Length: 101
Image (cartoon, rainbow, N blue to C red; front, side):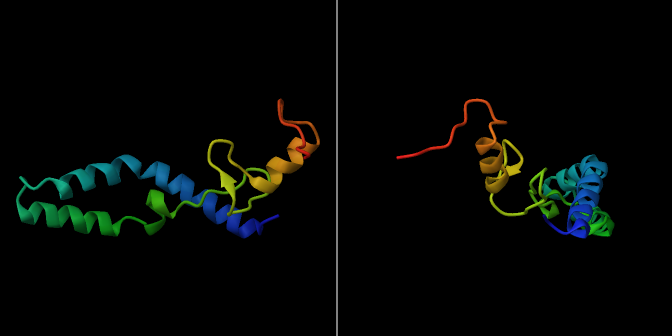
């Protein structure tokens, strides 16, 4: 089980990134548009830099929804490889059986 503080920090980052998503996207669109004058693009860049760092989407860590483990997480299932194995062995995932050879 991961530290509760790390899980809470990641949850705060998720909330911030969702809150500022539209604003960041609009500012980035202005910054990347080469037809807009340089001064306006620079002002947009300054506004973007004043937003919280944790509002960026790439600061969010993929974590297991069950254990909070940050590594070995399947994106589609949002659970770690270890939690997936435990759930599979206990028969909670339909169609998944223990492999033996």
